[in-house]
Length: 572
Image (tube, rainbow, N blue to C red; front, side, top):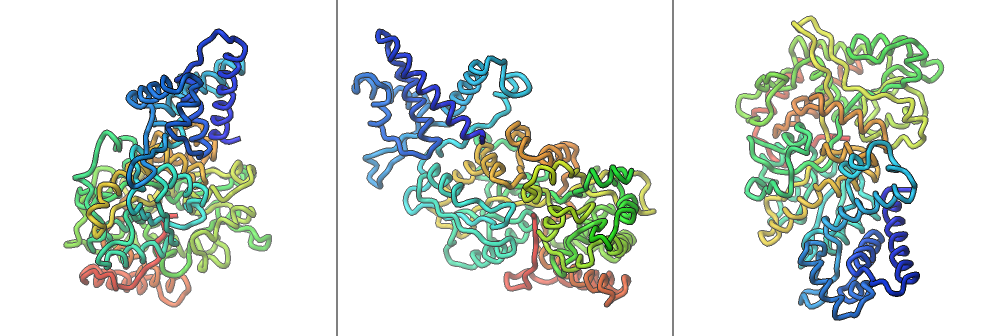
């Protein structure tokens, strides 16, 4: 049973108990407030329409008195009235976030009492109430009023918003919200095409985190600084890397909705049987891969995305970060490299370098302990091997854990940041890291002026902890918010959620491995072509790295245009 259905069942039980009280004690007065609150919450959870009249009748007191109680509940912040017609003469009634939170608290306590226990979950009742996030409340105003809202989202097995959830979100936002989707690769193309239109087709668009800089460079996103409100979006609740990924030259252009670091999945049972500790360095990873690699049995040491262009290009850039270097000469920070003030001028590639060569040698060594078709593997291809138990370790996006359906598949898996690249150039041990991926919501710069404030309020609502929890529960298994990751109902979905939360708190989820520069797509494409040629044996390592260095330098000097060669980028 889901937490939502359990909440709904408890509300229905409390509603029956309220009726039982007046049936058994005819002298008692009906509790108008509780009758109306239970009636409204119960129907809200089922997506059923409630009018002021039906709500007043649910009070089970004289109608005139009940209408005054309805007004008092509205004045007290417990009710949201939403116009049902353009004239605004008729309304639907919805519970406010305040009423939902109070009712969840009440239902939690009632469950514990009815179960004759302090609480049905581990930990104190106070801890549970403080951490469980309630279902989304109706948006504070009718966001779908007028011509409604058009929202562009990614379509991916680990991210796609189901039809049912789209209907629910549309209903909660006002009923006239249209969700459009595109593949992760198509999302970039459509977003950039949209920027060329005289008037945007969408009010809100999702942007791959490392591509925020590219979208800003072509004026595809509206700055959000003037519209930010601390009362509605609490920055401190977002993982630092997630929030900073939406900044370009310290200006906010989007709000994180889903994050997705690439991490190392490993088979705990396989490593334990072989007496091998989970690897924390690339040398340990290769040693474990060699010990476990058994191609004659169809079992392989390490899997990763070696497919041509985007997949292997991103793999090299992220492995390069494991060896302590970004793909561009970013300014150093105490614990890494700076990304907040990334400017095109002065940036140069860092590919044909000692660390670049160490990265390339590592990838060549990986080939020997990888599946035979690794140079054809794209994003998502590895999940099948993990599901079928054909690989001991895999560099994979965290969200893919949601596609491992059987409990044993997840129970046998461990999750770590990328192992540290071993070089002879480090004076001290570097921290392991997990390159961040994911998506943020922004407003197109060419959106209709009348839609700007509505779009911003919609982003505030969509980025709320309540809505993000609903997205995570659907199967994304990724969240940019500390509060959602701490929710016990969310943590029960997969051990991966707690693992990523611990990485984020330890400062291991990092932005600089995939710097949000305008030319990131072009860099990935060029690097992918050259590294793939090297791994195929068509080019030597020195030639491939020198060619990649030269071509990326040329790309950095070229004027960025939307018509430039598209590249495949993935954040999950």
